View 1 (tube, rainbow, N blue to C red):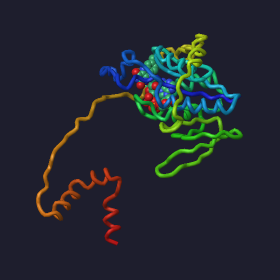
View 2: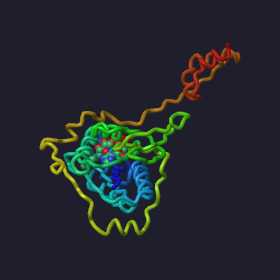
View 3: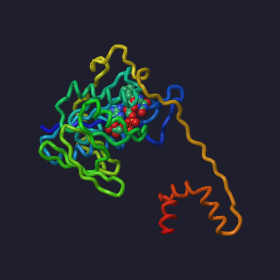
View 4: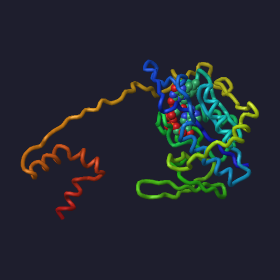
Length: 279
Ligand SMILES: Cc1cc2nc3c(=O)[nH]c(=O)nc-3n(C[C@H](O)[C@H](O)[C@H](O)COP(=O)(O)OP(=O)(O)OC[C@H]3O[C@@H](n4cnc5c(N)ncnc54)[C@H](O)[C@@H]3O)c2cc1C
């Protein structure tokens, strides 16, 4: 059996993001939830492997409030075999460090013999891109990020990923973790028969802090080592400036005063070009 675990997070619909400024967390209970688009691509990668290999078993795990159960049913409707919800008030408010820790505690305890662990590259609501790499750290397994294609052979995985202007081909021993690039593995639609299958049995496994054997004083909100201090929309400042004078003088002034901004926008180092021109 080839065992794949996919970590999926429920995120609020992008159009509704109520924010609790006192606690620094999203009031996700007020927003409609959906499967994080990056997690959905990780699941799609697993489903494509399952299409190629009949002996594949996919476990989807989500840590979140009770309503996150919805995305586990969705994953099962798409073709996942087992759904697990890690949920407890004492896990709420976890930063990425404790999220990775809790996911790893479950995996070590209940499915230590997995072959491949898949995550999205970064979620649509918090976008830290930290959970995948940290989870690999917790489990002491190798990891590769922003993967765009996957080939499995002889206990190894061969992947391709886009880096700057290059495609990289890399190999990694299994078990290992991959985070899936946002541009790869376009998700499929949920088939009607899948929805029927997913709801035939109410078999999402719900695991709380006690089941996981977490310390009785464990409290993610309090124990998380990183905290959101503030979230705000940056104020934009617009000002118009008219440069007057001879063209050469005006262009010189423009580059002296705004060279850095212009080169950043053009993606070029203007100084380098100046030297190249002088040669
Ligand atoms: C009761 C409860 C309430 C919670 N409330 C919130 C909340 O209000 N806001 C919030 O952002 N988070 C909440 N969480 C979840 C947790 O705090 C976040 O998942 C975590 O901080 C992830 O950060 P990120 O989105 O930047 O992950 P990233 O590092 O950007 O995520 C990358 C990938 O890691 C995986 N991943 C990330 N988070 C999870 C997860 N929770 N479960 C499974 N896979 C995951 C996915 O594959 C994802 O695509 C809650 C958890 C619980 C138990």
